[in-house]
Structures are given as C-alpha cells and as structure tokens.
Length: 380
Image (cartoon, rainbow, N blue to C red; front, side):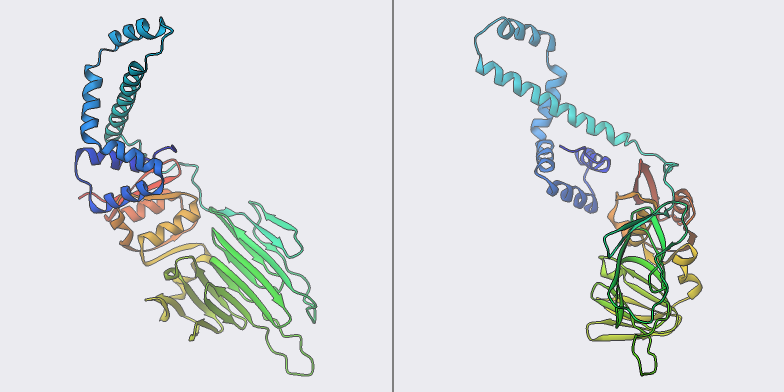
C-alpha cells in the first residue's frame, strides 16, 4: 500500500474519536473509493468490536509465555501444528491492527505540520521547452529572458510553420514566434502554433499574453489584407487582427477569460459571438461567454508580473499558486474552496508573503508539510 496521506491519517484518527463533518466524510469516502487497498484499510479500522478486542488483547497479552510455548511446540518440533499456526498468525494480525489504530490516534494530536512553507519553494523561473516542426527541440534555461523563434519575414510562405511550446509547473517563458508575435506564457501552459498561407493559429491550454505582429496575406494584385491570428481555447475561438490581448483557458471552462488591451478581437462559442473593444473582457457565466468591462491596469498582470485576484474563489487562486510555486494543495475543509478574495500581488513574492495576505482576511489558515499546502477554515 502507498503511504497514507497525512490529512487522511488525521481523518481516520478523528473518525475513531468523534463524528466527521460532512465535508470531511466526503474526503474520506473519496479516498476510500480510489483503491481496493484504501477500502480494505478503512474496513479493517471500521470493525469497532474487533478493534477494541485487539487493543485490549495487546495490553493483556503475555508475550513472554507465548514465546516460551512457541519455542517448545514449534521451534523444537518437526511436526506441523496447523491449529497453533493459525492462532499465532491471528494474534500477530490482531496486534498489528491495534498498533495501527494507536498510530492513527497518536497522529491526531501531532500531524507533523509546519507553520511556514519550506524556504526552497520559489516563484516560477524562466524555463520551458519548444519542439519545432522539423523535430528539433529548444530548451529555455533559467537566466534566459526571451526565446526568439523569429526569422526574416518573407513575401510568401511556401509551407507550414509550426511549433509546440510548454512550460512546467514552477516555470514561465517568453517567446517570439516565427511571425514576430510575442507571447508571455504562464506556468503549466501549452501552446501549439501553426501557420499556413491564409492563417496563423494557436491552440492554448493555460495562460498567455499575446502581442500579435501584423502580417499580411501573400496575395498579389489586391489591397494587402492582414493575415488572421486565431487562438483556439477548447471550443472557444478568439480571432485577432493585430492586437494585444490575454487568454486564460484551462480544462475547467469556468476559468476561461479573454481580455483585450489594444485593437479588436472576436470571441466565438458555437453560434454566439462577442466583439471586444479595449478594456473589455469575455468570461464564462452559466456555461456561455459574456462580456464585462475591466481595469486594464489590474488585468495587465501576467505581462507585468502580478497576481490579480478579483473576487476569485479560493479554489481558482490555489490552482494558480500551485502551478506558479510548484506545490500541491490539500483542503482539510472543502467549504473554504468557495471563499472569495481580492488582491494584487507580485509574482516575485515569496509563498510566505502570499499566504500571509490570504490569512490576514481571517477566513482561512494554512499549514505545510514539504511541498504540500493544507488549507482549512480559520478557527474562531
């Protein structure tokens, strides 16, 4: 069996002494359903009669006499004694069950948490990888500031240009695409770029800020027309004609955002379309795109290096922090996920400083163990 997570040990221990809250029971039930080994351990500990019997047996068991019998009847005899063997095995199993339960109870009072995050947890650094269409790869190393993939602009494009860029958890990257477009990629972001004669297209999962370079269609005998630049974010399409904008697109549709700073973009979801002007943003409400006006100074966060939490649920905030600082997040109370916060903080801040700001609201409290953050309600 894999190591039991610390918060699960806490819940198993607590369940033996008092009733769990609904959210705690939900967490324990989910962990129990993940593997048969988890279920087996829970079933073993849920047998209260056997548990009490085993604990009592440990305290009353005459270990010295038992070993003497074992020496006489087993070690000094070549005969097999199946009945004795079963009793011995059952006794050892009972002892182990009892000791395991005692271990859980002990951990209830001493969970081994730290009050401050480890000092080696640092903000995201410049690192990422780009795979070119010809199969070659380029690694951006810490210390680099810009990875340039640009080339002299040719009057025509004879074949497709493509690349795939990715940043890991705890990484970020600024790249210059072959068409001259500059992209700031956040942590844990994937960008698939493809260009043909009539179109430039990006498929995005994660967060990125774009400064799109103007490029014209390779048509002769006509008034030059700008080559479209399209970002696909799942089933949402953002069509651009030379502009500055930000896109956030994760597997969670509700996290989608497109913010326009300069120029004009069209955001399309199925048959629904919204044309944005500078200072406007599309977001998801009840499963479909909507428009709202925003503060550009506040929303220019990714490019300028800030976190902006504008009445964001804690679950969204912690997902972003987990990717940026390369940590794991465990909720000891699921109800805190919906708590909302407002703040504007430097992405270069230490995790300790970010946590202090969130805790200062009096809503939540954090505990740490290694590279895992445990979140719970602030006790009253």
